Length: 411
Image 1 (cartoon, rainbow, N blue to C red):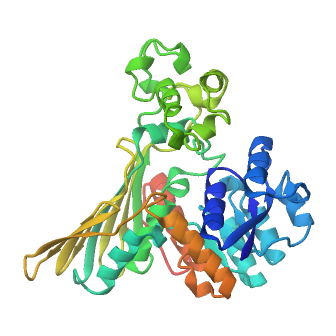
Image 2 (image 1 turned 180 degrees about the vertical axis):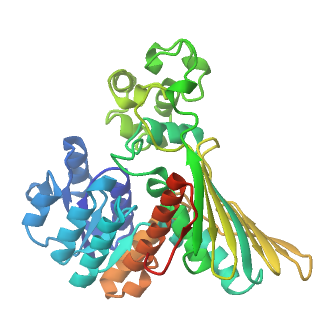
């Protein structure tokens, strides 16, 4: 049984902790969380004694090593300090993505894990899904020949973007990071995984085109509850969050980000006073709402990645084009066309909920790695994750400068 300290008891941290407990292979024995409601909720849910409930990671660290491993799921800009300190105490680390907002901080975390000799798994959950294993297996078997070109779409979803990236915690680069890092480092990492290495050249384009004051309709109010246009607005907070009350599956997310109490009165109070009730054209967001990244790999293979808010919220869509065949996937099923025979086959990965089963598989792999002392069970270790993060930072440099950025090993 692997014992865990939970550092950050929000959506992602509690999700990983729940998978660990449900597997029967993990037990949460300590929690550090600044929000009193989340802290108390996690302590009650996991049966953590009061002596091991802390208001911050520093209090946890001051107590010495209390568990085999720590789940570090604080806000993005607060990863470095707890990760470095806890690694130094001998905690194995399950670190939520992105590793850190800057390359220097991410490199410091990776170095701390190596120095302490602990296992570090970055939560690039897409690497762990049954769908990914299916796609990667077909590529490695040569089923489509040499991979030449890939088109990949991340459909963020119109309401999801408004929730998390216009009104929510990831709306501003200075509070979290650029959209490509906070949301889409999953996808860049996944593409690097499929190609088996980082690209040689990267370019990118994207902007905040719609969710800005210049697009605000005439007559719109600052808050949805006061707005005469609310009923016809696709981004109505009133429709989204009051509608979520009727579905218990939505109480933890997205409603849990808005209010701890799933009642109409609590939701209306939150929309009246908090960030989730603001007009999407009158918020303080600054992250892009659409972006493309173009990559060229060794040997001339190319890849285009598109992230867009202006979609339904769905699994990723990917087309993989090879010299002998073609794959078209939707996060669960793959259409395979064999150029040599003309045969078409549909393959089902059996992907589940929770990032297509990736959340559960990631936690299982991490617990097994810690229990056996085998870091080879982790495909999203510090070195590989840092390498794919560097592609994200290169793409952001390219987008801002309007240039093509060339990557060199370790850059």
